[in-house]
Amino acid sequence: MASSTANGSTDAPPKSIVIIGGGIIGASTAYYLTRHPKYNPNRDSITILEATGIASGASGKAGGLLALWAYPSSLVPLSFRLHKELAAEHDGATRWGYRALGVGSIDCVGRPISASRIPGKGEEVQGVHESSISGTGDGNVSLQKRSAESYKRLRKIGLPSDLDWVSFDAARGYDSMGSERDTAQVHPLHFTTSMADLATEKGAKVIIGKCTSIGTKSKQVTYTTTTTSPSEPQVLSATDIIITAGPWTPHIYPSAPIGNTRAHSVVITPTREISPYALFTSISLPKNYKAGVPSRAQHVTPEIYARPFNSVYACGEGDHLAPLPSSTADVECDASRCQDIIDHVSSISDELRDGTVTARQACYLPLVEVGGGPLVGPTADEGVWMATGHTCWGIQNGPGTGKLMSEFVMDGEVASADVRGLDPRRVL
Image (cartoon, rainbow, N blue to C red):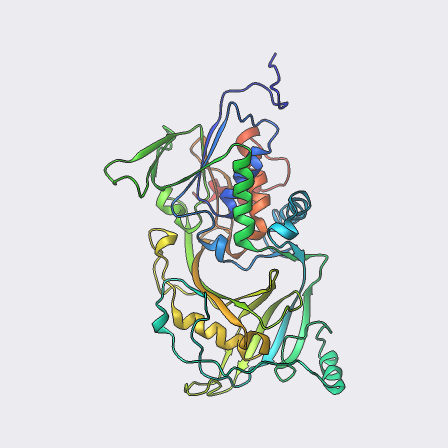
C-alpha cells in the first residue's frame, strides 16, 4: 500500500514538469500545480521556461476584463469563480486590482480634437522612438459641470448616473452588457506576475531562456539564454512538458494550428479618478475631426476599460501587418495606430483627452485556426500537454486553465470542468 507524505499526497514517482511560456496560462498552471494535493516540493520540480520575462507578451498588455458571458462556456464559469477565490485568498483587490465593474456598449459621435500630443513624462513607448510622434495637446481641463438638462438627457439614453466621464456632447445611446454580478477586472501585469510569484513561493522555478526544441519522446527541452551562445544549448529533462506559449506554440509544436493577431493598446492616466466601467464603443467621427489632419468621416470601435490604480486602458482593431517576431522582446509597435486610439477615445472624453498617456504598446493574441478553441489538455505524445489559443480571453480563463492543467498532469484526468470539446487531439 502506498504511504502518505507529510503534505498528505501519496508516494509516487517524482514529477519534473516544464512549462514553456510565462504568460497568464503558464503562471496560473504553475500556481495550481503547486497547490495540488499530490504535489510534493521535496520530490517534484516545476519550472517555467520563458524567453523574455513573466507577462512580457499579451498577458502584460491586455485589458483584464473578466466576464461570465465570455467564451468558451465550458471553461468560463470555473475560471470566473477562481478569480474571485484567488482575490479573496491573496488580497487581490490590493495586489492586482481585482474588482467588479459595469460594462456596456455605447454609441457616440466624436467631437473635434486638437493635434496629437507628444508622449507624457515617464511614458513607455514600446518599439517606437519618441521623435516619431509630434504635436501637443491643447491643455484644456474639463471641470465636468453639467446642467440639470444634461443629466435628464443622459438618463433618457440610458447612461448610468455615475458614468460621468463620457462627454455629454458625445453620448447618443447606452446598453448594459453586464453588471457587477457577472463582470469584473484585474490588472493583467500585476495578476500574472503575482501568480508566478505565488508559485515560486511554493517551490516553482522560473528560467529566462528561449525554448528551441522539445523531444516529444525523450521529454527533453532544449533552450538558450542571453548568457550562453547558441552553440551551447541548455537541456531540461522532464516527465511532463506543458506548452503555454500562446502564438509561439507552432515554433515548439509545429502541428499546432495556432495563428495570431497583433493588437495595439494605450494606457492613460485620466485627469481624475473615474468610475469603473468597461465600454465597447461605437464612435462616428466627422470629416476632419482632428485639427490640422485631413481625414474622411469614419466609424471606429475602441474598447475602453477604466482600471484600478487610476488608469484607463484602451485598445483598437487588430491587424496582420507585421509577422510574429521570434519573441515578445522583438514586437514592433506602430505609433500611428496607438495615436489613433488616443485620438478616438479623446473625442468622447475630456478626462482621457487631457490625461497623461503612460504607455503605447503592442502584443500578439493566439488564435486557434481550425476547430475552435482554446486547446486545453493532452497531445498525442504522452506527457506533452497543451494550453493555448485563448484569444482575447486569456486573462479571464487563465485560472480555470491552470486548475485543469494541474489535474491533467497530476491526476491524469480533470474533475473541475468538462472540457472534452477543447481537447488538442481534435485538431493536431
